[in-house]
Image 1 (cartoon, rainbow, N blue to C red):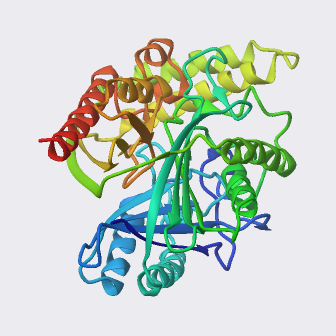
Image 2: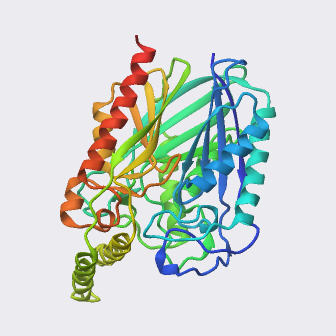
Image 3: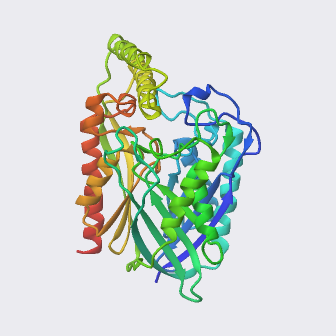
Length: 431
């Protein structure tokens, strides 16, 4: 038996505030809302007595401790016993920075306690709706579908990219209607540029809306962001407009909705967590960091206005990364970080949740070596520790690598830790 309850709620703030994701905004306040920010929750359990687990998918830039702790406190006021809570961020750059505060030692920002309290109140209502609605016995099916036209590797259009979407569908056994759909794909939701000051969920919001509208009853549709560290729409989009975000989100929705290729999933929901110790990077001293910044400034200055936009953006972001590196050189960083990672499984299908922005090549390695038939790698979950770059980006000094808290040893530790946790969960199900 698999029981499911699901709901969604609007979380768009009621007042202006700074938006997250782009340092170039320099604290400018939001000017309104283009499309609502949303939270969705799916509660799964193996029976009425099972506390189960809840996926909470939020239109936020990341899950920082202030947001995570507020959600856990509110969950405990509604549920007894309290389910395991997995929090994921869509990583939209059109949500309030005040909800999360500082994401990174190189990106200081303030928490807006009133904004957090308003968000927590709305999430409490969402939890209560999910808790109080009649549980439905559901039949889960899953499809891993190839997709095109959504994104590409933003450092090299021919570089690694997991061009698939995972689609979990929960169908009520009683009447065949859909209780919920959970979609995942890895691609930065950055169609809208830093100049945008309106609240928006970017292309994932457009995808959710289109999928829900294309299904009978418009069920709750959650989006989980995948291994998007070096993946974006940079070389795919035709502009940086709301219409283009709608087009890209709609394109993914069309591919999610097509085809009868979903297969049944058997088995109770299983979850396992770990606090993974990961070595931090060696940060250059002040003079070295300043030299990196000067080199990046010179490289950007050598480009002309006729240079391809994608190449200009790479050069600009490399300078941004060098500036973050200079800030890191002034910070006191620990030798090791403790990363919360979580694996969830239904039968031979698993999700591994990581609190970083994993590069696509690392996510693909985890998928290929996993003991599960299908493994989906989810980033931006239950914490935020910035980019997890691969060896090539580190060698090339990309923005992501320059601003990362980890070097190649850290990336290898996360890959190994994720695979170890998946293997442990698999052994528990198949002793």
